[in-house]
Image 1 (tube, rainbow, N blue to C red):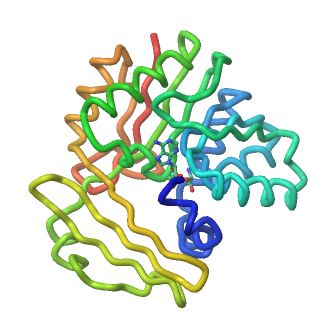
Image 2 (cartoon, rainbow, N blue to C red):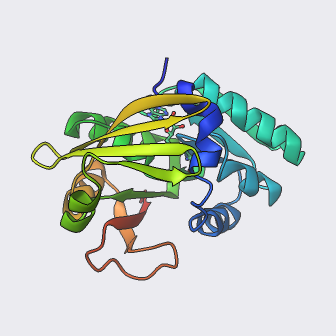
Image 3 (cartoon, protein in one colour):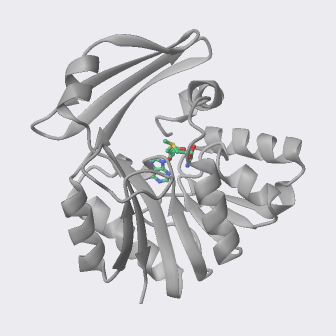
Length: 233
Ligand SMILES: C[S@@+](CC[C@H](N)C(=O)[O-])C[C@H]1O[C@@H](n2cnc3c(N)ncnc32)[C@H](O)[C@@H]1O
C-alpha cells in the first residue's frame, strides 16, 4: 500500500497546473531514444506524452493505484503498447534492461527519507544506465518565504482540492496533506541542499553535467527548484 493509492484519482486534477516540465522531459527522452526508465512514473503525466512522441517507457512506481490510472490514460491516448508499467520500489527497480536515460520527474526523489535511501536509489539508477547514459531529475528545497507563507494552512490548490504543508525545517521534512472528493492522504517529503545532491551524485560515480534552476535550462542560481543532469561515465 502506498500513500498515493488513496489519491490516485485525485492526482491528475490536483497537478493539473504542473505543465512546465513536460516538454523538457519529452525532449530528453527523444534525444536518448527508448526505452527510457521513469522512476515514480505516477499517472503518466510525463510518460504518456513521451510515448506519444514514439519513445518507449518503462515506468516504475510503488502505487498500483497510480499505475492503474497511468494504464487507462495510455489506453485513451492509444500508446499503451509503448508503456511497460511495473510495480516496484525505485530503490530496487524491477528492471534488468540497461538504458540510456533514467528520469525521476516532479520531485519523486524527495520521497527518499534518509541519506542511506538516497544513496541506495542513486546506486540503483547508476546500475540501470549504460555507460554514457544520463539520469535527469528535479527536486526542491523550500525558501524561508515559502515556509512562512504556507506553514500549517489549508490552501485550495484546485477547485475542491485542498493541500496543507507542515514544514519541519530542522529535520528538513515536509508533511503534505491532500484532500479532495475522491480521496485524501498524508505524505512526507525530505529535502537536502543542491550541494548535498551534487555530493551524493559524485559519490555514486556520476559526472554532473548540469544543474538548472528551471526547465528552460537557466543555470541554477539559488532558487527552490533544481533540475539535474548526471552522466554515468
Ligand atoms: C510526485 S509523484 C510524480 C509522478 C510523475 N513522475 C509525475 O511527474 O507526475 C511521485 C510518484 O512517486 C511514487 N513513489 C514514491 N515513492 C516511491 C518509491 N519508493 N518507489 C517507487 N515509486 C515511488 C509515487 O507513488 C508517485 O506516483
